[in-house]
Image (cartoon, rainbow, N blue to C red):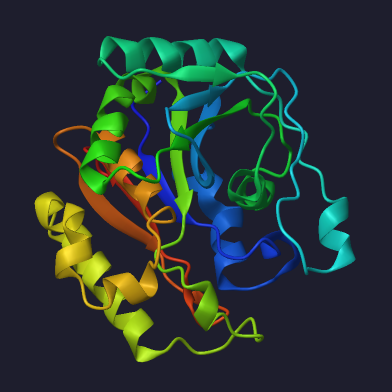
Length: 264
């Protein structure tokens, strides 16, 4: 199999699978861009731990890690299998890179994993493994974490960072299609331009350089998966925006592919 790109997907609110709009249309078409992966490794904003932790469950449960949404959402289940073999491979790569890590055989799929995958791969027939982030570590650390995972791209594994290009819950609108405020758009444009210019050092200093960085990311966990995806794409990575829209006003649903190959 040819080398796969790595992805950063903004998963938005947990009710994503119940909505119908631009971002769900994009996710439904995602599989058309590259061959079907043998397995998927997700780095989700909703699993963070002191040490990188890899899920090794054979049949991960669907975790409904949210409240206040329609009852139908709590009935959804994403029964994709896990892959202890891929989990072991991730552990091997991290340890080879000198990164201490551990495994968790009971971890299920949090909504950062199952809500976008339910839309993109509804058959749930591709094994899925999760890798945690370290919320107290910076962008550069997560980029280096991703670098250790690069060999997986040649092994048929699709690496997905699942977070949100902008994420301020205090600015969350009650309307799904609410227009984004200017400060959300300004950060979103800066992010898109930094990625298009392949200015990775600037990107990793977004906290200091991007407009309204703290307003859009009061905490960093929803952008850190992007840097893992970037690192895993290799030293010649190029960034390509695959999608742009907004939900609930405060959430940019931007999605990016990182690849050293031509990508359409």
